[in-house]
Image 1 (cartoon, rainbow, N blue to C red):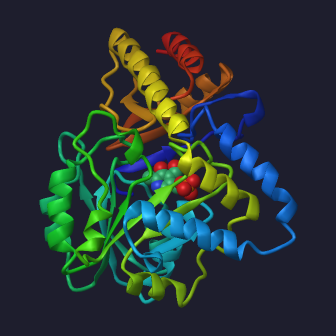
Image 2 (cartoon, helix red, strand yellow; image 1 turned 45 degrees about the vertical axis):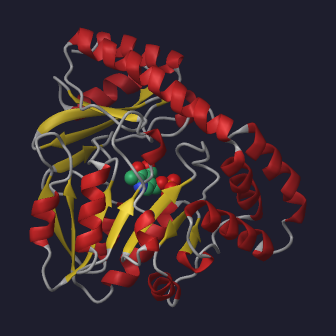
Length: 347
Ligand code: PLP
């Protein structure tokens, strides 16, 4: 990416021994309800889970207020991001997105020959929707929007985005990645899925990895126009990568509002604690609407990673416009206390 470069250690630490604040996982999951459903279902695992998958798709379609032909399932939303990138860009074209941005879809698109048109975010780290609209040309096959965004955690106003998607999707399909939307406490946010009822050409990706606490169980879906789903499914198959047990877990997790509410609350509390301590230490973080926070650091990114690793903590580090940043996921309160105390020893 022109603006962002991630740092990596030469040797990966043994994750089983670490406090894991690197991958924006939910420290409270999987929900007990989903654990039980997965265990109870494993006995059926000699069969393909066709019926169970149809049932889950029905349930998701009802929740989203769309037809079941509008839903495509994947083992995590990553799978769907990649499939869309492959199918849309196998004959070239360009993709418009913000920079910084979550790079999965864009990397795959570039690998099969797409050109990436990166549009710098605004001063408040929200999407520069005007500039993105201006970047669209006759070769643009997709606009990719991640809201709230990763790795910044920043949000773009739901009202502005709705207006943008409503208008600009008349020219080019818009993919909105809503991986963190349920965690956007106190923001003007809304899912773009309502635009499907108005026949707009938008694609919404959702995941069970974040609010539902099931990153390792691997379930995600996208909602789009049936014609768009059919185009992707002509070449790749939806849902084939999801196991019987994962389907059962996903269905149970969807019903577990208590778990989702608890995650939202505890994530917000631990994030508030982190903010207070970053303030105390003079770190100027970007206000986050997700389960991670990014802030500029005073040492090189790789040095940050190795010092944190020595303290038993996994974080991520990026250079953004050639300046080093640390991205830390929100763990439990105890984990954030460990992180804060480690950060206090690093300067
Ligand atoms: N989209 C965004 C913005 C993410 O941050 C992530 C994971 O961190 C994903 C998609 C992929 O998640 P999964 O494949 O677990 O659904």
